[in-house]
Amino acid sequence: MLYERWQKIAHDRRNDVALRDLASGQRWTFAQLSREAEVPLAANGAMVCPQGHSAEFIFAVLRAWRWQAVVCPLELHKQPPTDFPPLPPCYHLKTTPPTTGAPHAVAFTEEQLAADAENIVTTMGLRPDWPNLGVISLAYSYGFSNLVLPLLLHGIPLFLVPSPLPVVLRSAAHAHWNLTLAGVPALWRAWHKAGAILRNVRLAISAGAPLPLTLERDVFEEHGVKIHNFYGSTECGGITYDATATPRLDEASVGRPMQNVKVAVNRDGVLVVRSRAVGETYWPEPAKTLGQSRFQTCDLAEITDGVVYLRGRTNDQINVAGRKVSPAAIEQALREHEAVAECLVFGVPSGNADRIDDIVACVTADRRGTTEELKQFLLRKLPSWQVPREWWFVKSLGTNARGKVSRSQWREKFLEHRANGVTRLSGHSPAQRAKSPSLRRTGAEFPLS
Image 1 (cartoon, rainbow, N blue to C red):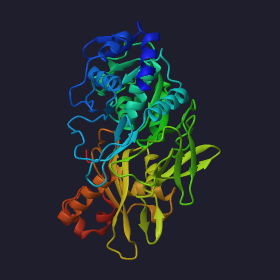
Image 2 (image 1 turned 45 degrees about the horizontal axis):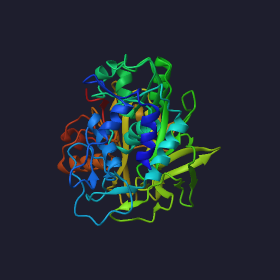
Image 3 (image 1 turned 135 degrees about the vertical axis):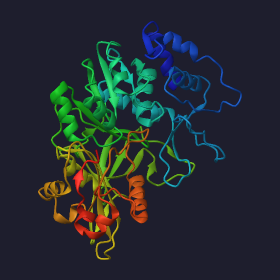
Image 4 (image 1 turned 60 degrees about the horizontal axis):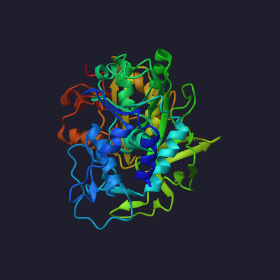
């Protein structure tokens, strides 16, 4: 099915440019890509694992489709899965971040992959005359669905950019007079701070992590570019999309369900997705949350007037004296402070048995100030019990290849520092903090530098 659809695209657009590598200057028409697909696979080609950020990735996918092999995109330096039970009937495996250290994947049929691409192209309005700039990872579910599938199943040209660095992005300014640019919040922030957002970007998309409202507004005011917030999951592809022409009013909003996607909130407040794009099953171990065109997420949500609002994740909630709070709600309020560039909130075991958890705020700030300033700011927006008791100011939170910041990793770092007596919570020495409970809890000036 997928290969037949590709053949029709390649025939109808055979003389048009399909793929460009902006690093090397090479380009391929749809007809040339079609010829690359005819190269036979290796003898053990039951599974193809494309990697990297070059034309070879696209060639590998086409050859797998042509010779009916399973496609399993991998980030660089990741090893293909081995020693697993037989695959279910599928043509594609999307890997997810492992929760137990063991490899974890979602199996998709051809029809499910095609349905996700159809939903994305139709909902977002991707166009052949607005080529995609390929900046994000092609192996990541977001990149594969937004860049690779629209190219191969809908004829949306793809221009590969060798690096997401602002100076490299600027070099793509003359690639085409109309461009579509998909990124993650960390990249949009870096591009905005460096003044690298291109004037010929006609469609701007952000996914992979919550898009800060302040960033969306700043980019819109300075560049006239509306960043469209896109929410999806490896297990089911695209879920919602903010198609509005102006910045959102609420950071928790992730837009309306994509075309052909239905969403609901179950009795526990968890978002449930139904569509033809939902994956077949987890592999190698199935789960009740995925299958039969239904996926139960881990996201707490509300649906108001057809718009979905995310309220945190079930496994991230913090228990403070028997009351539950979502770290996402605190992060959303904290990001509204003009000095906060990035923030991450999590809970750690409290020394007070009555509290269960203490709330920790890990913050990157753009200017100097005091923790007390941030505390007072939050007290005007949140109940006092939701204001963090611990503050940790760092130069950067960093992101992984998927554009996400790991809450669990930062929690582990914090606990390790606290256990070793080596911490940067306040910028004071351990001896100073030991003498002053206020320093230990509230910190001093920020940022570190």
